[in-house]
Image 1 (spheres, rainbow, N blue to C red):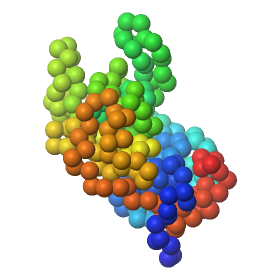
Image 2 (cartoon, rainbow, N blue to C red):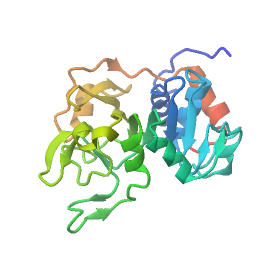
Image 3 (cartoon, rainbow, N blue to C red):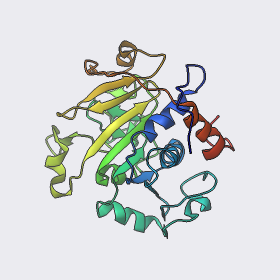
Length: 270
């Protein structure tokens, strides 16, 4: 089906629209994708209707390759299993991760550091007296550690983009080695279990990637922002020298799919 490829102008799309579209662009046709509730559902749904029709979606509650006719409200919604190849449980889908069958995972986090380490556990000196207890890992650590690549979708604030996260829930490209605390490459810690690491971080301001040393750099900045403004909202010295330019806006066809086909009920879209 032909879709309008005209790029939307600023004011014709919302930040959540751009986040969903940018995430969908990370999906390669044929990928096995582990997705969570919310934005990842919008992203995989859009990818399957555009550039990655053969992508397979796995939801944590146990469905594999479902093709729901209406958007599920969560990964545990019964709609996830419509036309699914497998309708099982958490044990089976995490077994796919353990076997190395998952190509891409979409995750979120409260904090991220310059090496892609993500914290969803607690703020402050967690091992002593934490200032704040967060939701915990859930499947974050397992999914990030066992998928071949991970894309994190996060709100960007200076306090969230840290030089060093308070607690490593999900390891990035360079992690503290126990017991010395020395920062070493993830491969040195994981050994034969190593499969990959963070591919990108998509925020409400920009898209970030990681260089050959596992350090975050600015790839593209969203319309309405600038490289300097993005850097100001990181508490580490973000590399902006490799920026490719502005993030490509959604097309009118992609917006039509998001609002009229994928989420017409407005479950996640405003």
